[in-house]
Amino acid sequence: MAEQIAERPEPKPELLLANWQDELDSADLYRYLASREADPRRAALLAEIAGAELRHAEVIGRGLRDQ
Image (cartoon, rainbow, N blue to C red):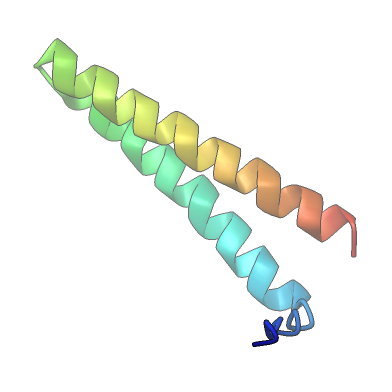
């Protein structure tokens, strides 16, 4: 049985840009929440999530630059 490979959809710069901004906004929100959290463990988790969102934004940013 032959394996079918799905075609990669054409990238849409406006969608990438919106997603990039959403990731940056999320990172800001998680950083803010971490700064207001009294529990150090929860604050650390929120800061970790903020870092993940920034990394996502970096990946999307590379996609935008490659267009």
